[in-house]
Image (cartoon, rainbow, N blue to C red; front, side, top):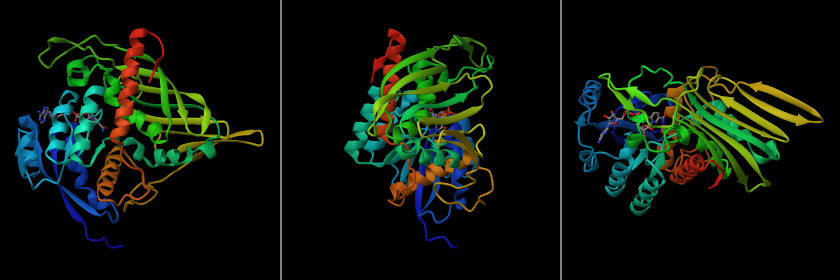
Length: 380
Ligand SMILES: NC(=O)c1ccc[n+]([C@@H]2O[C@H](COP(=O)([O-])OP(=O)(O)OC[C@H]3O[C@@H](n4cnc5c(N)ncnc54)[C@H](O)[C@@H]3O)[C@@H](O)[C@H]2O)c1
């Protein structure tokens, strides 16, 4: 099939670190998408690091700056991807909105609830199109699990578990970075770092947490910086939240467990979603991403089946259905959804996380901090 003519969208990146570089790589794989209405190009990057500037210069990005405000004033930029440390979200997201620029903002969308609320207000006033980054639900197995987790299939929900498990901080010799210091990543610690990934699907399915009991764990008290000087590592590495949630389809509130861990020994970057009901259930994990499991209870028999979703994606791709899907593919799918939704072309496909979902997640994380301090369950 020959693709329709695409509209060009010129993207400026603010913050060209780990995630900013991924965007450049994925727009250069854009032709993997079938009949997408948009053709994005990265035309500008702003980053305070000269190494990052040089990386993008060598990669052929035409406009490089150390001052993000230059991108806001540039009429040749249609939208922004903002991927900076959490303490900078409020200022830069609000400035972007005021400048009338649409953007995809990295999670947690503000360092705390107060900050996220201010950003949401600025976006609403400026009427710009904004979504929040969360790519892992775009795995085909996750998409299949989300579709399966409907009230008819599950029946009365018994319990739900969701999580993102890293082991990236198990190495005590890893130099400290901004993600391990409250002043840059926020008091919510790992919940800011990994929480939106965990919250996206349960919130999208309409499961509303009403109370939380939190176990937050600051495991490593200090780390050395690159010069070997010990710096307080004053952030929660791990968070386990026991939530009680409600839905519009059942009277009883059900337990939901969210795990967000930077130190989960034995894990790499495992995102999982597990919902069990009286009639059926579903489980998907990126640890074994080529399959997902479905549970049914019928005629007195409990049965699990394992299915292979293949490379069946939210937005169609040229890649053969038998090939394997991975993290960069999930990012490509998230951007395909973001740009198609902005263009009014997403239809009923799965959409990126919204500002309302980011605010809801922040409310849960704030209540979790209160619960940690009070050592009791808190309402949300
Ligand atoms: N979606 C995901 O899977 C995912 C993964 C990792 C991080 N993130 C999020 O992405 C954001 C950035 O994280 P990262 O891992 O890319 O961090 P990073 O440290 O690798 O990159 C951040 C970049 O921002 C730059 N920067 C700092 N101050 C700046 C300023 N005033 N103007 C312009 N640039 C500035 C830094 O020089 C750095 O290059 C965070 O919000 C984080 O939570 C998302």
